[in-house]
Length: 590
Image (cartoon, rainbow, N blue to C red; front, top):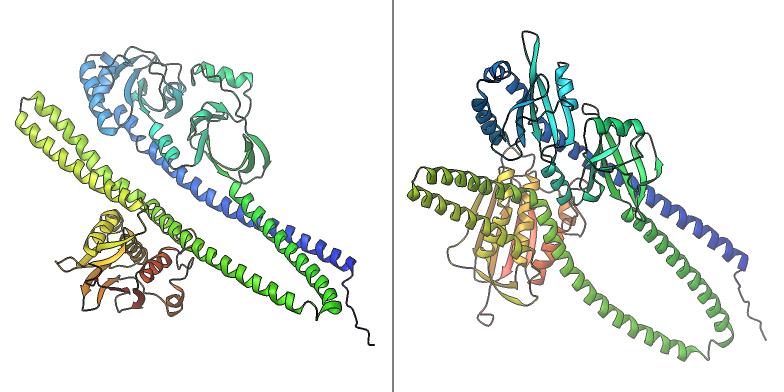
């Protein structure tokens, strides 16, 4: 009787393989963490540069005002004789309204306020002495002054900028503008990011988080508290240290910090001209999550390989002794496994369809995020016009012209209707519609898409050419999906024409006996043959990193194919074209 050779895997070899696999998993997780952290650092630096620019712009637009006031002849007369207080008060009030600052005022050589833009208000600066403020002492020394502080009279924080008023080399006083930085902080807060600014003493006086404002990055010394108290900079605020624990720091202004149990990356940058520092915090949850996901995936994969090796070893041993007896049993197990795989495949297909619906909704929200700036710009114009009309209406009422006021109210009503139409389109686009197919008029879907993308078209100076039939063209589709297809293709065309001299977007809709045809062409550089082959693949994009996810065209392709239609891309002499074919609504559908 022949003996069968049994092959066994030594246990020490399995242990070595496990140790090696653990090392590979750890190193891969570490590499993933470092790569994700470096990407977060780069993104944070870009965001911080943006916020530095917005802060400098917010202050720079008012920097000229004190200088202009210091050169005004009426201001000189006021500081020398106090004869024209009423004239200067009125001038400051009108100039303050035009400039959009919080207050303008004139101080004499000892710091008494002689005239102010808020002279009519209960909290008028007129008669108040602010000679203790550093911006006045700087002006008294012949320099431009700047200072952030909580107002002594109003209790409202603001940024003060001053300019000395000098005549014949004699200091007459100072012209001061106060700027409200609350809108700037509100913009940071609405952006969903953590941004803060600290002064030379480390006091956080600007922050997108209200609970962090007027706290310090480090405990203040007695000398620092005395200096702050002398200038009455922050009123009676306690100025307690913030509970930020720094875990690591480097020379590039980067630090890893913890707050309330969460870890953050803090990027800091000095603002030399103002003596401030601006800080940007980004959560490390996503970075660590990626590393944990890689480690977990590697661990699971290693355990699967180990389990498979043990299973094969055990199976081989059993097969050597009982192969004939277990042949039928093995076949039965295979059948059961196939049934389980079929059931699992069915569940997977259902999960994929649900994921597709979520991706489509995510694509809508991503499109809304990209178009948010354009929509804000679109709404700012009627808001500004309404404000102007309201001011005109008050003036006409004072003059006793009610008929003209009625015309103004009609104009305001039309503006609000226009703003309402924009917000209605946004709500209907962001809404997650029903999954039941219904008759959809293509012209209405196109109009809805253009209403949402109009700000982007205007922003990028894109000329629009539309050719659609007058009679409605209907298809059977899911409500809102065709509008998303139009929006994805229009936004794709706008991005493609970013560097083109001629920006023309052509949209044509036509119909024959079997199909409804949609053709969307741009004047961009076109699509390469290699890109055409992969253009509708998920996560494929020809844009720069951070400019797109590569899901818009993939989602559009899936929507069109689900409607039994086709979509293809090709190049013409002027640029790229997308050709869509959809079946017409037959009599049974109607």
